[in-house]
Each structure stands twice: as structure tokens, then as C-alpha cells.
Picture 1 (cartoon, rainbow, N blue to C red):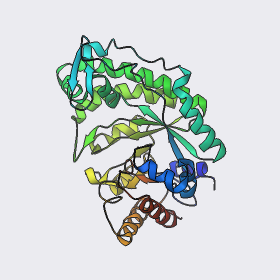
Picture 2 (cartoon, rainbow, N blue to C red):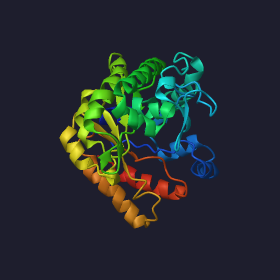
Picture 3 (cartoon, helix red, strand yellow):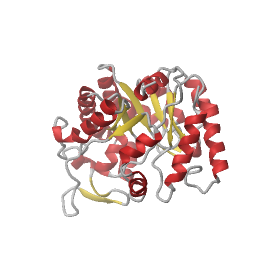
Length: 332
């Protein structure tokens, strides 16, 4: 079975020959250096693991530039540095979503992974809440949700319209799945109330999702943390895939699979907070991988992957071992 065929069979909630696999690395220092030293290139590493998909990234996102300390409307955020006030963010200059340079790295991923290797291509796409943090910072974003929700929604809508055009362009290039990145959760709770999610995030995110669905594209969501209270809304948006369904943050992947089978496929399973790179013995690591496969592979609807990026300090031999076990345990 070809890798792309394996992914699409799983996303149709059918059983392929084995569970499709992927790993999040994305060029973080240390990890990528060890991969290059051991395999000669990241592409060779992907081939060795027999990965079934890739996740492509654009050259740049919606915001044309960050604000400067001496600029009107500049405020400081501990995580994001100098950002705009929300009023200034509504007027901040955006990149043209039809700028062809945005798509150059995506085109290269399609050419290599899809055309040469037969893999499925997911593309990183800007969700409204997470992208707004780059404009106004996380703290201000959360405050404005409560104090000035109308301005907050205007910003989300502006981002959504940009992302919708970007997503349509990606589908035109040959991307298989639009993967929206929008972190809404933390450990055992959401960053904001489900009511606010329905009032502000759902209608803005729907702009992106509707643009993809009208072109018969597939939708995937990345959201760290606990988001169980809004999963029904995720399904209503037309999203087919959910990453990572983070067990270490309070999610229950087995229950989610049972309750949403046929509607929401799971993508993840190998927790980088509690399993991979945590000093487990090979025997224990193998047991954890087998447990994930045993509980989540039945009936399809599952892509095995790390819950987030392989963390610096994780031996690449450990990653290789985990994925060799996954390929064997993932056979149907």
C-alpha cells in the first residue's frame, strides 16, 4: 500500500495494511543536527522510518512585521515580545496571501514527499487564536476576549480571511490536508471558557473551514492541552483529524475515539512529555508504544505520531526504536 493511500484509508475510518506514521521534528536545533549526523539528511531519515506523510510550512504568515518598542501602539508581552495593541493590530499591514514566495517551501515538500515518495501532505495553517497571539500577545488576547470581544472578533476575522485564501492556494498546489494550528488548552482546562470559544473562535475558524470544505479539502486541527468541552464544535466545523488528543494534559484518547469514531480521526499517541525522551528503558518504551497501538488502531481513524516535536536531548536511536515497534505493532 502506498503511504498516501495508507493515510487516506485511515482517515476514511477503514483499516489500511498498517497504521500510518509520522514524527514531528521541524528543524529544532540539536535534534535535526543528530539526524543529519546519523542519516546524512532529513529526507533520508524520513525514508528510513518509512513515514507516510509530511507536514509542510509556509515561508511566512499573515503579519508583515512585528511592532517596534518606540512605535505607537506597541506593548510588551513576556512571551511574544513587542506586540501591537488590539486597535493597532486591526490596522497592521499583512502579507499578501497570494504572494508566491509564501508557497515555495510548500511546493518543495509536495515535489519531494508527494510526487517522489507518494506521501500525503499536510500544511501548517494559521488558526485565529494562536495567530492573534503574534499580533497582540497571549495575555492581551485573553483580556480582550472578555473586555472587548467585538474588537477581538474583528482581529480573528481578519486572520481567518487571510488563512482561508492561503488554504485555498495550498489546495490548488496539491496539498492534501489543511492542518490548522490553534492552541486552546492547558493542563486539564481550556485557556478560556467554552462559551467564549463558541462566540468568538468558532465563527472565525468557520471562515477557514468553509473555504476548505467548498473545495472538498480535508481539515486537521492541532490544539495542545485539554479541549474536550468543544470537541463537538470541532466536528461541526468539518474538521476530520485531531492532534494530539494529549493524554498528559487530561484528554482521554480512547474515549474520544469511541465517542467520535467516523467523525474525528486521532493523530498522535506518542507523548513527548511522559514517554519519548523521558529516560524509559527500551522495554518500557516498547510497551508504551504497543499500548497506544492496541487501544487506538482498531477500525482505522488513527495516525501514529509524536504529541509534539521530539524534544532536544532525546536520542535519535530512541526515536528509531519507538517507530520500529510502532510499525510492527501497527499491522492490521
